[in-house]
Length: 276
Image (tube, rainbow, N blue to C red):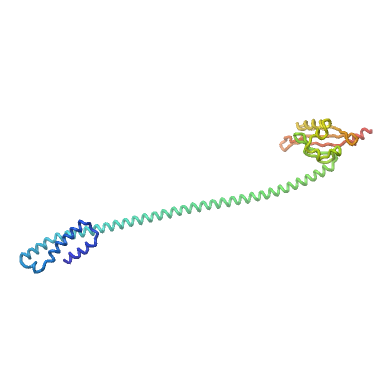
């Protein structure tokens, strides 16, 4: 009975299937009916003793079945425990693998970001160095340009001083044969000053008769010819005589941009020659 009670206590806490539970409960019920009989009633006669012996013998297979059922239940429980343990271990490995994978992805992203940031920083450094070099070059070019402008201004000043000291008139013409510049000397008459001539042709300034000779000479100079010619005009109660020389005004490549000429007043020289 003690063994039966221990088996009952053991199987009561196990999650067995309903069919197995019913068979074990039925076996317990049968044994309860035998074991709860009064001792005197069991031993009342030889027949009762024989009956008890028969019951004991008959109970052995029942105990063996109960032990087998309990063993199967324990074995199944052990298997379930091992399966749960294995599943837990697999889940732990999966979680660990996912964690390691996530960590690897984060490390790769951080590495790529670091590499990109380093590339951008290097690019910025290179650009900054290039900008510094460009700024230095611009500063140097600006200084050279300022020195060039100063030199040109000084050269222009010397040129104007030199030409202004001459009695001759230096002039330039464009492709339309209009005066684009005049330096030095004086005009043929007071009414024809240098600033009045700019932007006008010789015909507009001197009239068709006196100006045509200048237009013809300018045409020849624009075609690449250099020539010297004499011309005259009346003014201030007398005749004024001049000698003009014109040549093509060429650029660095040899192309003709206009005409450059020198006009010299030879009135006094002609007067002396006529007096002789």
